[in-house]
Image (tube, rainbow, N blue to C red; front, side, top):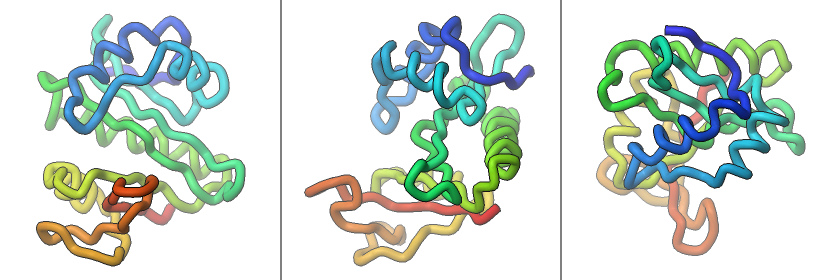
Length: 157
């Protein structure tokens, strides 16, 4: 498996991979991925096994709070899950984020995504206290806008 920064050449493969993440991950537009590859490539690593894209993380360092790196989308191809793909990608994001001087990785998840909760807490992320609890997960109401409640996870680096 080879980990490398996202490039414009990878966009079609990333869109196809992200489409496998429904219902929690939805592919962005080609224009969005062009932006990620052009302006954020070093925090948007992809994983390839030969010619096959097997994983990707779209992550962005905050311009308003440079200590933070937000993980927008994290996915491993269903046929390559539990094979270290996500761990390798997270390590790449973490290393790059530390080089940039960031101190925290964080992400959000929909409250009913219990698989995400298990995944993130096993990897050392903390479920940030919210104002309600849904199925044992702390959730912040309206985090991403009205009615868009989210579980927030963070990892101090």
